[in-house]
Length: 240
Figure 1 (spheres, one colour):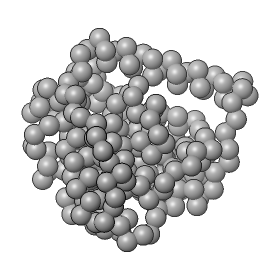
Figure 2: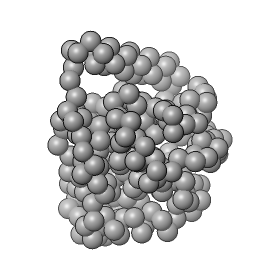
Figure 3: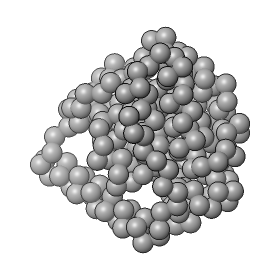
Figure 4: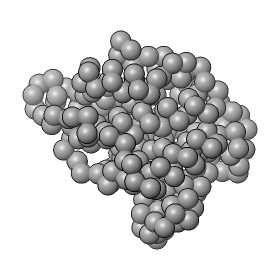
């Protein structure tokens, strides 16, 4: 299968256009929900339960071997939020594939791989793709994990892809920026944050992104960082 390729730094006008359109889509969705024009399905804790398959356990071990705790907790929250949003949208996910993508999605920010050549999203995607193949996954499944990770920061692109890709984007976006936060029930938000604490997340995570932008000025994240992306990372989510 053909894997999505690293485009490098996107031109500023293109990025601004994508961000504006993304904001407009979000506002339109919020308005439709408030007016009752769009309904969300109920969700229960089982909808964001972490898989316990052998490969899921191995993926957790692989992530924990190289990533600091704040990235591991962010990766769990990405999974939980993305799975919950999928349930509320009535979408069916391959939960195992989605979990693999979520728990491995920031390998490229780890100290071991932060200086590997290429945009950190594609560095992590390549590592995750290799992990999947080495652990018996078919190429089609490994490619889906790759593309979900590679595109997770790609506003205006990931949201148009299949659910396993879109929900890594939305799950990570919710954790960083509060994207679609109003769709998360207060009790579910509290339970997720109690289990996977977000304490000091912004102060730890923003420097990782800044390092990528500074050391790889032609990388994918460099453009958004130049537009003030790190300032948009939320200190807290809701009242938590």
